[in-house]
Length: 156
View 1 (cartoon, rainbow, N blue to C red):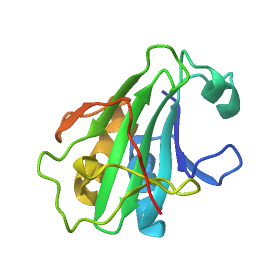
View 2 (view 1 turned 120 degrees about the vertical axis):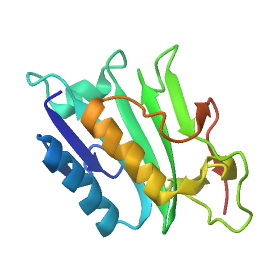
View 3 (view 1 turned 180 degrees about the horizontal axis):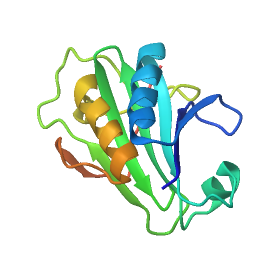
């Protein structure tokens, strides 16, 4: 793994990038501080010869963590092989006892989609998942999680 990046959805969204372990942790912390509410994608680049755009279009090598944040709450999903792959691997945070007072955590702000309440946990726990991902390239089992297929709830 040579580089990590974090930013909003879409190829033209601004991103922060980092190469070393210390830079990766600082990148996650900076982005969370600058974007306390919203949706972000955390991606890893393994091949120096291809551009980010080329790698992200390759469904056999697509891998990312999608994070939604609403103040002190967050939710995350890990996708390996991309959602267009016939057999993607999708893990998501899981809260077996969702809090009725927890805010709605965005999944896709443009479409007004939200993570289900059972995926919402503390932002501190999701931050640790993000750091584990940028350092190891794997979904951490540090917090409760489960496999998912349909992640979002439409809302207004």
